[in-house]
Image 1 (cartoon, rainbow, N blue to C red):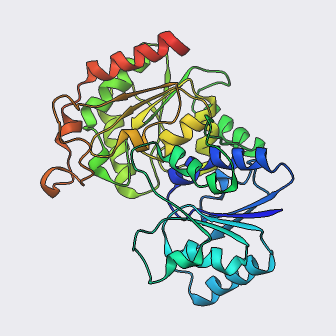
Image 2: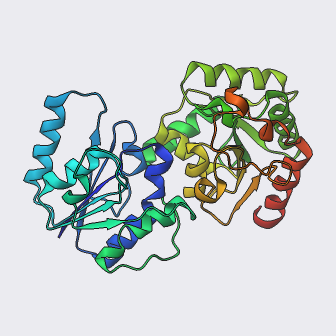
Amino acid sequence: MRILVVKLRNIGDVLMMTPMLRALKDFYPDAGITAVIPQGMEEMLSLNPCVAEVLPFKKGSGIIEELRLLKAIRRARFDVAINMTEGDRGAIMCAASGAAKRIGADPMGRGFIGKERLFTDLVPQKWDRHRALMDMEMIRPLGIEPGGRRLELYTSGESDERVLDMLAGRGIKDGARIAVVHPTSRWLFKCWNDKSVAGVIDYLHDKGFNVVLTSGPDRKEMDKAETIAGYAKARPINLSGLLTLGQLASLLKMSRLFFGVDSAPMHMAAAVGTPVVALFGPSDYKVWGPYTDKARVVMKKEKFPCLPCRKDGCGGSKKSDCLEAITVPEVIRAIEELIKTYL
């Protein structure tokens, strides 16, 4: 059996479907699973033992490249095709596959006319549960009952060694007590204030952690990380913008603790089993929170009943008052709970 799975979303979204991939492989152990995901995210699945092949999709690649991908999908002769979202491109890929069983997220009238008729089965998107559980629902039409599973993310020996070399060059030896602080998101309304992040860095340093600061490669994120590092009395190791996704996964796997905002690295940390303390504001933590028991979410829902508002800051300001209201002592309490339980 050959199974096509399409998830054209962000890094965290790709990781959210790894429990579903595990359940799919357990149910069909001899199946070859091909995943179509956005180009640049291949390292999220390329080493996953449940996945036989990763096909990267480059948005904006042009009609010729998209047709080539559709032809490759057609030639593979899939038996089952699953579009994990309501997106148009995924629907077209599933239709092009020629699979007898084509499962899609119910578009509820969104997208091009007649899209729902491209599928043999439609699955309602119930936003009252975690995204990973929503993804598990997508295989129910195959007779697979959703079950409790974890996110999975695997690293290569090459990326592990590269990260060890980078840390050693900055005075951190293999086996050191590392805490990763990732205070940025490409959506700045998800970020906490810089001086408070620096206060948490100083606390972690006082607790004996080697603090490593990370961010995405965007200039705004890197500048924010540099500002935070400047505020901290205990200067952290700043690797912001320097790591590939695979190297970031390796760093997170080596770390004892992750502290940060609602972001892809938060999900990556959960996937490699590292305890997570995450700050949440406008986005829905019930849907997008860290999918692990080793986590604490810090938010101010009692003072902000509007949460989760899902807006890009208060009044379109790109700044979230509910995040600004979180205090350093509140974050420290959450970290101490994790330290007592898991470290």
